[in-house]
Image (cartoon, rainbow, N blue to C red; front, side, top):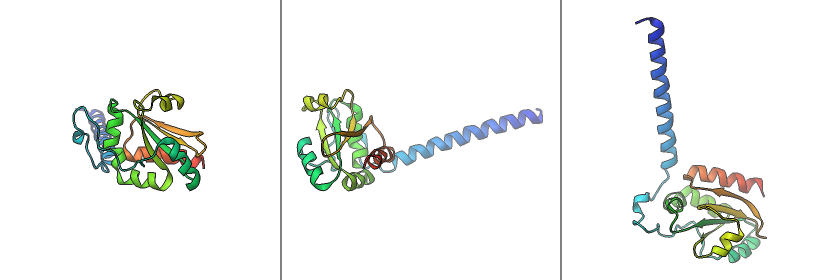
Length: 164
């Protein structure tokens, strides 16, 4: 075998190894904070209510946000949405997400099946959606879809900081 061919084979093997290692690190970073695995969700059911959410209606959260000077973070979900159920069982149980939500927002959970008028009025057409609103109800922005804890915090923090 020529030395050029040996060199190409060695470089190819190195590239495959580096890519595999990068994927493994990314997976570890995005799973390390998960406290409740999706397997803990009963079949056909949803995870127990995540501690990130206040037991307030959207309207009550807006009033309280006005007093506290914080935006409202509204997690629109549905029992029938697999991604929303997965996010409740993982992202919304991360200690970092819980701390971030408590420090920067008033977080409420809205079941789009039980409150369809609110979901429609806010333009929710896919689940899950995490909407951020000012105390007057105007939208700051939204995070659409399911994200692991670190990525969710990055996206949410960028929205909240940019719109203070």
